[in-house]
Length: 353
Image (cartoon, rainbow, N blue to C red):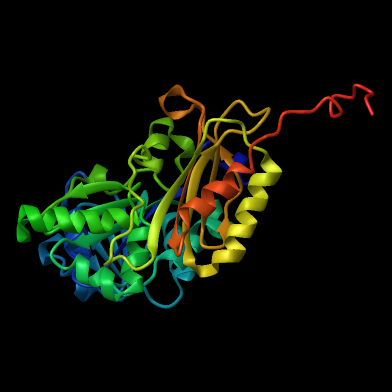
């Protein structure tokens, strides 16, 4: 069975990748999630238990690498290789390792200074992981009070925002309206097309964190539009405090040529290298009656999949490119060359010479 076919009936375990700079409020968000009676059975992978500070009354059983909570959730300490940790979790779930545990989704918290791109790329390109798990969404928690300085001084903070499917603006209570507007504008310049949530103290409903289908929206038609975000907004303008990182949305109502689009992306990855953070989009190809989903992280692209319908019922190619050093005019000019050409008289075999 091919990789694409294996997704027709989705039985893989969804993984939410939770990112955010130091002090943004990731651990507070996880603590609220684990305490929520509506959370379901979630396995959370963290660096250290001490960072989470789980209320002792919630813990029903503890071991060296795992805490079992009274509401059915699991909290695991990341020890060594993440792939090994995920495989051990799965073996416990299916009863091939002790203790047997039950969970139906996973949340992974990255360290505050980590670039989440390599991990995201691993989770959606590793064929062994792909058989059992799927990357549900990349979430980034943002500290509204300090995000401007973090973006100005840290490429990791920039990448955490740029790659996110959803950005959670935390600590709204700590900024006034002017500071809030300035902070959201700076973040929006890095990633204007992601979904946004605003909260204080890391309090957010469970359905705003898990089961979003935002990384690969193939299995939910209603998620396709959210996946691309508001591409009607003219939001890829430059801010002095967002050094060279921007997002560009390429749009085209005409049918695209597959070979030319492929060449466009090959050249783009060769040109930008690690400065290409995220690409995602829906493309209208000749002789294909559905939107083709294309996406990549850095230099790695997943196999094309299909959405059932076009957002708003209108066929239109929309591709979001996020990275460092993007030239909007150059990208638009090069992308325009990927349009499917009308056959000439000679192409139609008229016999004319």
